[in-house]
Length: 89
Image (cartoon, rainbow, N blue to C red):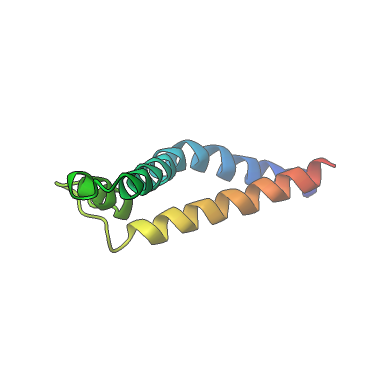
C-alpha cells in the first residue's frame, strides 16, 4: 500500500513540476526585475513587468486566478516533494 501511495505522489509531482516551473519563474524574475527598476528610479518604463508579475499577459489576463494557481501549485509541489523525501528515508 505504501508503494502504491508513493508511486501516486511521484506521478502528481512529476506531472505538476514541468507545468508549474514557467509561472513560478515568470513571477520570480518579473518581481525581482521590478524591484531593480524601483531602486534605479525608472519604474514607469517597466510597468509591464508588474503586469506580468500579476498575471496580465496582454491577450490573456489571469490577474484574478494567477496568484491562487501559482500558490496552490507551489503548495502541491512542496507537499508531494516533502512526502516523497520523508518516505525515502
